[in-house]
Length: 96
Image (cartoon, rainbow, N blue to C red; front, side):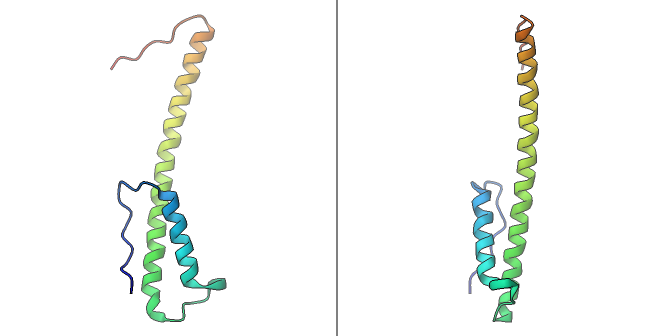
Protein backbone atom coordinates (compact mmCIF):
# COMPACT_ATOMS: atom_id res chain seq x y z
CA UNK A 1 0.00 0.00 0.00
CA UNK A 2 1.33 3.42 -0.93
CA UNK A 3 1.71 6.23 1.57
CA UNK A 4 -0.86 9.02 1.54
CA UNK A 5 0.19 11.92 -0.70
CA UNK A 6 1.98 14.78 0.94
CA UNK A 7 0.38 18.23 0.85
CA UNK A 8 2.04 20.65 -1.57
CA UNK A 9 5.00 22.50 -0.16
CA UNK A 10 5.59 26.21 -0.50
CA UNK A 11 8.38 25.50 -2.97
CA UNK A 12 6.51 23.36 -5.49
CA UNK A 13 8.38 23.83 -8.73
CA UNK A 14 5.65 22.86 -11.16
CA UNK A 15 2.13 22.84 -9.75
CA UNK A 16 0.51 22.33 -13.14
CA UNK A 17 2.42 19.10 -13.74
CA UNK A 18 1.56 17.96 -10.21
CA UNK A 19 -2.15 18.52 -10.83
CA UNK A 20 -1.99 16.63 -14.12
CA UNK A 21 -0.25 13.66 -12.47
CA UNK A 22 -2.83 13.61 -9.68
CA UNK A 23 -5.72 13.76 -12.13
CA UNK A 24 -4.31 10.84 -14.14
CA UNK A 25 -3.66 8.80 -11.00
CA UNK A 26 -7.12 9.44 -9.64
CA UNK A 27 -8.77 8.62 -12.97
CA UNK A 28 -6.86 5.32 -13.11
CA UNK A 29 -7.81 4.44 -9.56
CA UNK A 30 -11.49 5.27 -9.90
CA UNK A 31 -11.84 3.43 -13.19
CA UNK A 32 -14.02 4.05 -16.23
CA UNK A 33 -17.20 6.08 -15.96
CA UNK A 34 -16.81 6.79 -12.25
CA UNK A 35 -17.17 3.19 -11.07
CA UNK A 36 -16.24 2.64 -7.45
CA UNK A 37 -12.93 0.87 -6.89
CA UNK A 38 -13.06 -2.92 -6.64
CA UNK A 39 -11.50 -2.77 -3.17
CA UNK A 40 -13.41 -0.58 -0.67
CA UNK A 41 -10.17 -0.27 1.31
CA UNK A 42 -8.92 1.97 -1.54
CA UNK A 43 -11.54 4.61 -0.75
CA UNK A 44 -9.45 6.46 1.91
CA UNK A 45 -6.47 6.60 -0.44
CA UNK A 46 -8.62 7.91 -3.29
CA UNK A 47 -10.11 10.53 -1.00
CA UNK A 48 -6.58 11.55 0.05
CA UNK A 49 -5.61 11.88 -3.61
CA UNK A 50 -8.68 13.99 -4.30
CA UNK A 51 -7.93 16.20 -1.29
CA UNK A 52 -4.34 16.66 -2.48
CA UNK A 53 -5.61 17.57 -5.95
CA UNK A 54 -8.01 20.15 -4.52
CA UNK A 55 -5.28 21.64 -2.30
CA UNK A 56 -2.90 21.86 -5.24
CA UNK A 57 -5.54 23.42 -7.44
CA UNK A 58 -6.26 26.04 -4.74
CA UNK A 59 -2.53 26.83 -4.61
CA UNK A 60 -2.54 27.26 -8.38
CA UNK A 61 -5.49 29.62 -8.24
CA UNK A 62 -3.87 31.73 -5.51
CA UNK A 63 -0.59 31.89 -7.43
CA UNK A 64 -2.35 32.72 -10.68
CA UNK A 65 -4.26 35.52 -8.97
CA UNK A 66 -1.04 36.99 -7.63
CA UNK A 67 0.59 36.77 -11.05
CA UNK A 68 -2.40 38.44 -12.73
CA UNK A 69 -2.31 41.27 -10.18
CA UNK A 70 1.43 41.76 -10.71
CA UNK A 71 1.06 41.72 -14.49
CA UNK A 72 -1.75 44.28 -14.27
CA UNK A 73 0.44 46.48 -12.08
CA UNK A 74 3.35 46.21 -14.51
CA UNK A 75 1.07 46.84 -17.47
CA UNK A 76 -0.27 50.02 -15.87
CA UNK A 77 3.31 51.14 -15.23
CA UNK A 78 4.30 50.48 -18.83
CA UNK A 79 1.22 52.32 -20.10
CA UNK A 80 2.03 55.32 -17.91
CA UNK A 81 5.65 55.30 -19.08
CA UNK A 82 4.50 55.15 -22.70
CA UNK A 83 2.15 58.08 -22.19
CA UNK A 84 5.00 60.17 -20.76
CA UNK A 85 7.22 59.21 -23.69
CA UNK A 86 4.61 60.11 -26.29
CA UNK A 87 4.13 63.50 -24.65
CA UNK A 88 7.87 64.18 -25.01
CA UNK A 89 8.52 63.87 -21.28
CA UNK A 90 10.49 61.35 -19.36
CA UNK A 91 8.65 59.11 -16.97
CA UNK A 92 9.45 59.94 -13.35
CA UNK A 93 11.86 57.50 -11.77
CA UNK A 94 10.81 55.69 -8.65
CA UNK A 95 13.03 56.09 -5.67
CA UNK A 96 13.65 53.24 -3.33
